[in-house]
Length: 128
Image (tube, rainbow, N blue to C red; front, side, top):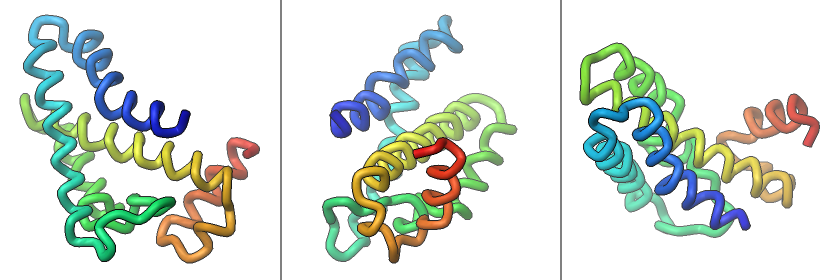
């Protein structure tokens, strides 16, 4: 179920964002939101490239808190930059939700993760 939720949030939910908030240009906006998936190219610089149960938040260069600050700044620019910012931030939220699902199943698996404090704090806040 976690995999389904993850990929639905990456590919399905952007349709609802595009259609719900940008009805006039929803097709173009949806394509831009999907194009923000290219942010995952930073996974190629990781060693190993793929690792089960690895949280990408604050691990990969384009998934760091510093990068997210830049994505927030994009929200204050004109089209299409604010749409790109929305897509990138939603991508980070989706990856964080995935991290939370993994963390709830195995808290010890993330003891050395760079996002462990955020996971612990969010978990306590949500009562998980």
